[in-house]
Length: 209
Length: 209
Image (cartoon, rainbow over all chains, first blue to last red):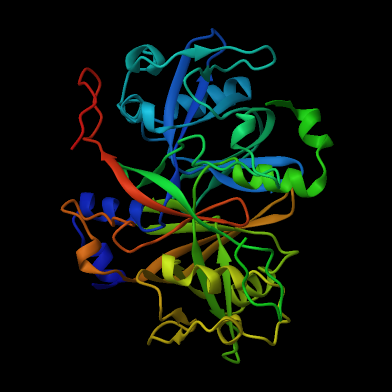
């Protein structure tokens, strides 16, 4: 199948959304926990998490203010605090359900059966069922004028991860935490390690570890 | 393992990079093809591709101008054109090798054995071995002042994907194209479909398709 720009423009709206949302490849599946200043919690599944830098440890999310993510964005702006929690194979049903358009006064924790976990120093709830949990502080927000979305950049200020899922170089192996990937808007994937590669250098053949 | 902000700051530099680069979960593995105005080609593996919107079809990449990606960024600025090509299980060794710091006059296509594919209307080469190929036109570049990286936003102006990898809703199933995911800087993962979910609605229990 070979599509031009006008072929893509001519696709029926839902087919275009399904195709373009899936075309980047595997996306990380994370639950973003927030609360407003009254402590009312909110939870949203997001697949747009991207690494911005390691020193300081910065991650970004893309928000579409017109959908179910808008309460999350409002809470982050209000408190500067949010949590990021990996979705694992055991909580996919509940994680996906957080995408429903609940009213602002309904907590997706209560609605989906996931458990709030509150920690000192973070005014947003973590997901107790998650194995990998990050406490975040808002550092910057950039409007992307090209289509009205927002890039929200935060710093990791706390990190919980099972020690047995960390390899000898200090990296997380997400297969060991049963973390899942998303494709498109509705498909969840389980992954296994195919190969690890040595640091690439010119003049040296690719080497598997 | 529970790390505070100062614990993360205190990690040895390479361990911090390994941990923070792996903490978002699975990342898409893509090869970004470019050429300068003389037609000299360049190819770089990148894991920061993120969906920005479907109408128009916009994707973004994060560039760190101080590493092997800088020639790619220079070429995109010079020509406004680039390609994005999924890495599949059969080309992981070559794809990873593009991360080596080759001089600007060395093409990573020639150095790694991957094949340039040129198409009318795109002044950047595709990867012939890839099953999913996107032709991109630069639409915007935003400097992220917080750490000196750059967000590069492009529009998909052509798209090649095997018809048999598209499901009934119009979405790509990346397992059918043997596309791989990356964790951290050196680990490649193979994935299989765990479950698909119906559109989530308040008051309706999560439903598997």
